Length: 420
Ligand SMILES: Cc1ncc(COP(=O)(O)O)c(C=O)c1O
Image (tube, rainbow, N blue to C red; front, side, top):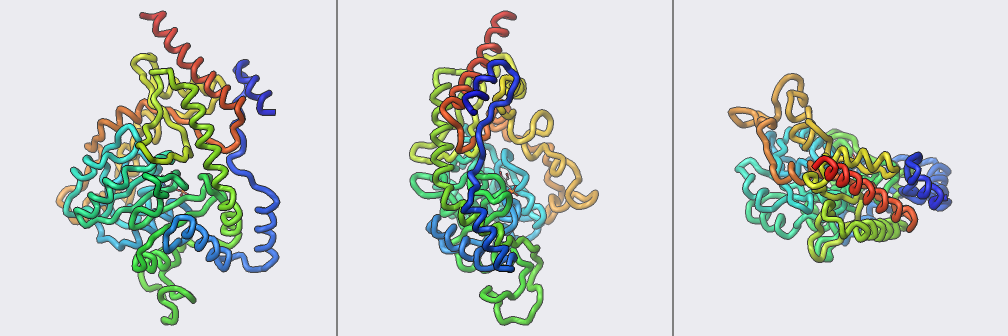
């Protein structure tokens, strides 16, 4: 079936089928049925069991599930309990979900530049620290670990928290240590990532005090049984949302946790095969992985030599799509929207009414995102194309992807030579 679809790409008619992103089977169905039959679908024993298993897989003391990756990143901030106007240093090339929680918590994202790993440049992070800085958020973009050791050292030197955003990087590893176990707190998304139940998220921490605050923060700071405030009179003890998941989601996450190693291994195998197939092409450079790190390829990214190709990354991606390869253009956003600091929610007054809050909290003039620049990232990421990986890419599909990308590049090069 896949071979047939791969062959049809040559005719330009069909989009290549990269295969299912997850293998949901009878075991998942049985787990959900068991929860439904129990009559207790809310957050309960299956959630607790998944939290224990997820924490154990990371060698971390505590896991706190929540309703999405965006919620997880908010729980990380809520656990830190920062003052309004506190600054969080983060990459501008990430999902808005990395920072939405920080904004809802009246914090101010401060953007630092990235390098050819598409992750934070530690030197630029350190240069952007101010007396207001509270945390560094290390986003392991596409599944590629940040330079965690360097960021940890900077955080320790300046008394800052290190938060990992592992939404895209399940079971990636920095020098042999699984991501999510390396920061003070780490957030995960289960919405279509390696481990998925169609939604959900989790926070990991080894810190007892942060765990207590995280548990309360995802559940309206209520005094639940077995929780940090057990036995207190019923009340909301501080301002916090309801970000709980339920046992239906947790049951699927538990069965999927048994399959995720296979997904990750297959994505790595497929990504390395595509990279190998394009290795002789100087016009495409894959996202750099630091020596000793394990990239788990939620997405496979390349930076194009757009000068030699004579086209923009968006035009290259569009041409590959016409050949049936679902290549994406520059991340995040494209054209004028570009990096997060160009997105309307930061560049315009679109947080709290017409105010510039929280960007003016505790400072004379509000931080003006239209003035922010991360030149290296704008160059590298502006020339980026990416392929969403699946664990079910056959050898024929991988070959078809490589052939279509090579053909796309060849056509742009020929066109350019024709005009030269
Ligand atoms: C790096 C990163 N952080 C946070 C999020 C937010 O996760 P969710 O979509 O589950 O809210 C995403 C989502 O894609 C993400 O890629």
